[in-house]
Image (cartoon, rainbow, N blue to C red; front, side):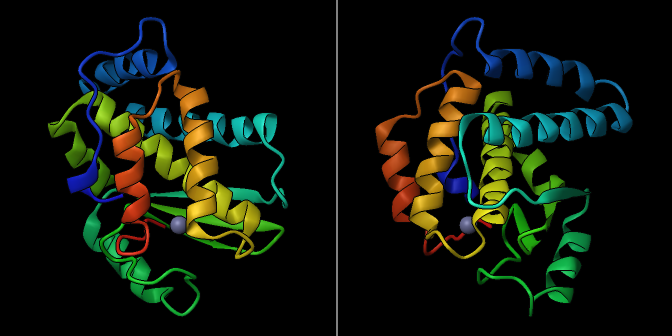
Length: 184
Ligand SMILES: [Zn+2]
């Protein structure tokens, strides 16, 4: 997902998980970075469990998450691992993964995601959760599903998880740009 195709919601469904997460995030952003880190890690754990509770992927690898707070360091990681990364052109992305059927590692460019806060809290949360689900699904299917297939499973999970309906035009736009802007 690239910034120009990011998501905006005028109002959040009352009592939905996206609303709760936005409220939690507001609290953590005014405190220190450790709280933000805890929030990001806890949300990842919740997303990971949610995938297995709501979907039966092919593999169930243990997944480690690597939060990188500076784009420069993230790009360094991309370079170091470029031979092992399955999808092309990763340096402008939010995340990438390395995996076999027993273990996965997901690298997240937190700095780049944080820029989305300029748009709205919900834009940040949606992109973060989509990124999490996207990379988790890649780790659970390796190269046995196409980007489009991953994206459609991801949308179902995200809608159920956050308690929202993704606008159809947005979904089409994302899907059309999957190749040009591979997000993993
Ligand atoms: Zn992908």
